[in-house]
Length: 325
Length: 265
Image 1: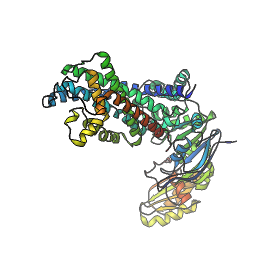
Image 2: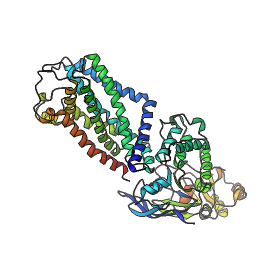
Image 3: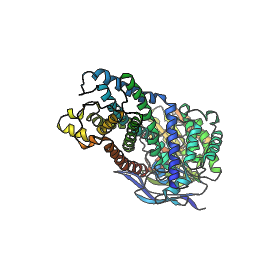
Image 4: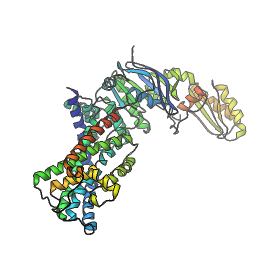
């Protein structure tokens, strides 16, 4: 398969800040690449360069056969972009928004109209189609924004954090919509702060931090690297941290992280609920009183702890992506 | 289709979008129309009797100045509209589309003319009520309004450029104030330029806002007989001087704004 998005050595500096620092990307046609990282890692900068919105200080990229630096007009004809904040016009109706974007893609009046109605139907917005977007919920705005990106059925699609700020139900809906799209042969570059989202959607994941790639692989490969699920134990007394640690280490393949002040221990574990029961049994057997014990999926924080030894440094605390189980 | 056709079509799509906003958010229009009415009434009744114009009525003199000031202030809407679109990410979306690079600005400046048409209409009505009259025939008056609109259009390109430079709508409103206040007050808008001292007088005489005001007064026939003739070229040839400014402003600021819009960051 040939790469339809190809970037080499992308770098972008803002004064002393290196937003991107030599990033390579290669996305085969018809696949989804997940660009995973905390706030400020350079995800949006990468998307903005590939969609011709900003110019890199170094590096080059081609999208759908056109060079982003020398043929930006050609690139724009072949891409759809849905940014981090739903860029829809609040004063227009849903239909008017899509129709306008369709016209600006030069689809022609009739095609733009037909496509707009089709997409409103497909994205479950038909009832709200003729209401101003002002009256839409956050999830509806996001769906409309995504619909805008695909009005012209571009072969390459960029979605910058398509589910950030959505409630869990809207997020799951959005995933369905995105999967559906790519089933039709579209190539997608998706950025996200949620490991689970990348896991659910992406064929290939690039983890970035401070503008650089720190890991690259399929979801399974990354999981193997970071070691499956996490068991979290909060003990009642600080004196029992040592004992709890021993028990966790017995079952865990990886390092046990300890937060002394919160009296909390976290360890990767791949043995599923059976192993979890053993942990509970042994804790009880050792007479260690606990406030809270749980098993959860690894989050971006766990990925960063494992890969870089430090927690993801973001300006805002990312919402936990892991579902308590 | 060629580029020019696409430029026209894309601009039309953008203008249509802006016009829908005027319809859906009538509050904006309301304030656009209330402030000129307030200005007319304020100056006519509060200052009207204290300011004496040799040979004529202050109210007649005043209206041309208020027209000019209001359309210049109206240009701020162009900048504010663009700054708002930038803030909301709508400009980024437009910039990622294969549309014409000038269309967002051409469409915006074109649709904003509507604000000025409406505010001139309302001001003219208010003016007529407080005693302003057109004394020069309707063809001449029509040119007077057309000149004011053309000047406002040119000025909206200045504000379009400023709107693309500033980070938010709040900033543009303050920035516009800093530019527009001296331009509209150090002029012959509210008092005859000859009454101003030294440097201010020279500034007022060469100020394009003075010229458009003077031109409007001439074309509406609001210069009473016996008024001292202007002695500087710009005010002697107010219509021509205004047209020169209109052309120069558009020739400089339209390319600047389009360049700023299309330049990737």
